[in-house]
Amino acid sequence: MNEEQRKILEMLADGKITAEEADRLLSALEGEVPDEVGSAPQETTSGTAEPGTSADSAPARESSLLERILAMVGAGARYEETLDQELDASGVSLIDAETGNGAITYEGVTQDKVTVHVKKVVRAPTDEAAEAFAQQVQVHIEREGDTIRIRKEHPRPSWGTQVGISYEIHGPKDVAVKLRTSNGKAKVSRVTGAADVVTSNGKVELLDVSGRVIAHTSNGAIEARLETLQDRGEFATSNGAIDLTIQRSDAPINATTSNGAIDVTVFQGSAPITATTSNGAITVTLPVGFAGQLDAATTNGRVQADLPVEVVTSGRTHLLGHIGEGGEALVKLRTANGGIRVHQIQ
Image 1 (cartoon, rainbow, N blue to C red):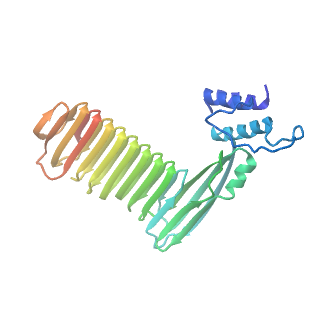
Image 2: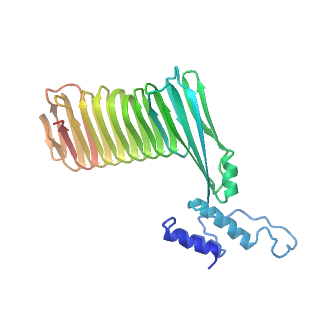
Image 3: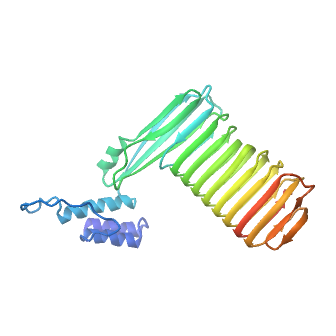
């Protein structure tokens, strides 16, 4: 057993790769190129190459292919670099940060400055390749009027190279925060301004936030612990649960997921609530004295209301009626597969 084979088996034993991936790697070492990996076209030249010097020799192809596959499964070289920058926050009203692959967090603190901690991680087939690409990764942290913008810039990674750039930001509490990332968690905490947070693959978390909230993710849960919701509250994910606890809501709440449960608790306020999921249960807990309309329906499940409701129409899978003294605030709940339960704060 050679060194490369031993390394593959160690990765399999450590759970870093699957048995299928290990088989592909071992096959690559034996000169069998897996169809799903592919290989670059080889140039054909006339003449005869000297033994051991051919550019497309089997050992060279195997080594290159192995390095690339190792990088794909996270077992290649890794290079990490950090950057810290501080800016004056006097007069700043918006923090606007965007990255491609990595987490972003913003925490409001009592200070008149903004501090940004950047972590760059590059994975590549070799140490030299990882470090070389990291030198091309730039993060621009600039102030434009009343806005601080954070942006990343780098060439398109070559095949087998992966780049991750994450931000940890601390700044004033009384600002609006806009965060964008493609793959990674996004979190905002202790902010009294609006929060606009979007990620494609990762959890969105909002803690001690007041103001307007927009939270979107494609694959991940959404968790929010809000002091006051003002103007608008929009929470949407394709695959993941939504868990909202709001001390006071003066704005409509709209929670939507395709696959996941939805749990909404509001302690004060009489704003309308809309919760929609395709696969998952819905639980809503309303303030004492809430007055409005209830429209709840499921396809496969049961609707239950543990609070005073003047029923207009009802059945096992639907309930339409007036909550408390009635009113204009509509609580509209829909799921295809799951139960619905409406409570009142005790």
